[in-house]
Length: 313
Image (cartoon, rainbow, N blue to C red):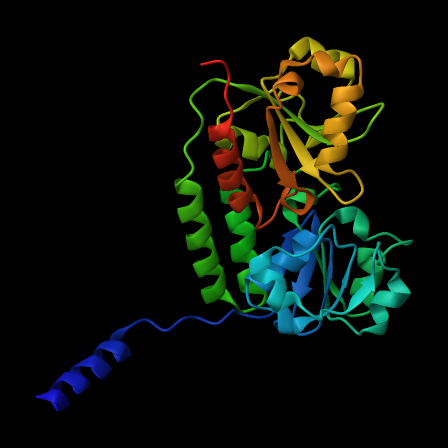
């Protein structure tokens, strides 16, 4: 009977559809550039934390031959996978430095990474046999649509196809969707400011990129939602007039959340804001504030932070 059971199991496996491998060459439109990928990339340079963390999350760390312009330390669950990755530059690496590691693929977190005084212009790199890819939400040659979590999941799927890692991409998307579905929007009808950087002139989250997407998922009404940009320059006077209920502080090594709190408390104008007086802050690490695999976990974490805030109820 055990032999019959084993035979039945084998026949069942044989009847399952095979996982189709990626069909190369792949031709994709990326920020208005047609890119062709002849085979799954084997030697990859990542620029910006979002690019590095995406590939590590897909289990592709062994293909990364160099990283540049990282915005902060890796999250704990990726620290081991990312240990020992070669650092080409703390800032944007030059084309010469990038080409020294002989990449076949460069993944940039921003389209501006691909400039003559940066990693190199995309047509030039293509002529050298190096494919380039930009996170779609960071396109500038063409204006990206308002960012949604579904678009992020599509990007994960696209990278799974590029790297012939569809199974890993499918698992990552499923995990992210489950975590996002567990986040309930806050029902209190609160307004919010997303404070990214700046002192005299604050740089804030506007209506079309990761800040807007995250605030909407949290049930927060962004005071700069009507500006069709990812981020925008604002004025302290306008922020005081809006008097947001909550302030999101982006915690960056060069402009920490604590520094922002001090500035807001010491500025005679902003010190009168209800959110400042009552310390109604939400904190997000800088690498999680741009479109990438950290957005969903950050949204869940911020939802927990928001639930602990009191508003005189």
